[in-house]
Image (cartoon, rainbow, N blue to C red; front, side):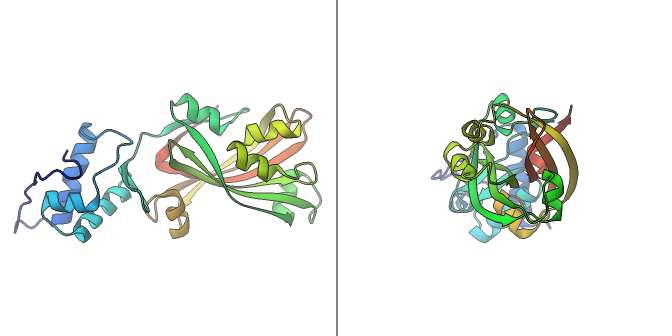
Length: 248
């Protein structure tokens, strides 16, 4: 495949009834599926692709949008377009750890803290954590990545005052498990998981670098410590094309 700066030109069929953007999308898709462009690789810039195919950038952008809708590429604002990697096998069982799961797949895991706040527990969170409604909880909004690609975004609630300061520990470590180590939680297990699915909203799609309307997997889970105390309730939204759930 031509790289950015390559002056080679791929001729398109003109007047044959097949739109230029469709021909470009088909050509790039064929290169991706054949392995000519490897998983995780960055595609040339829009300007380079426009020069290669002899079209304007708007036409290229439409072709890339189609590839994103088909789950073949992801486009990150300010960084460019990347070939999607294969889905990560994601076991759901007693010990579900994002970092461990991603590492076993040979990819680098990291979690970003988007926001944190203290709030009174509503009925749903209170039930999940077995606390009285209105009891203060710490709410975290997080993003989880594998080799820099967004895999999931989550809303996690933890009881207070036990986990006061957990947000800072998570921001520093990038991992729920590593953050727990500073709160005398050496191990924890999954008490329950509920699985659902729906299309992504425009805001969720932008956050996960997927096309609007692509499918999300929704995991609602509760974790307990070694004493059986409920310590975490989470609602995660996974880009469905990037994980393959394995229920253990």
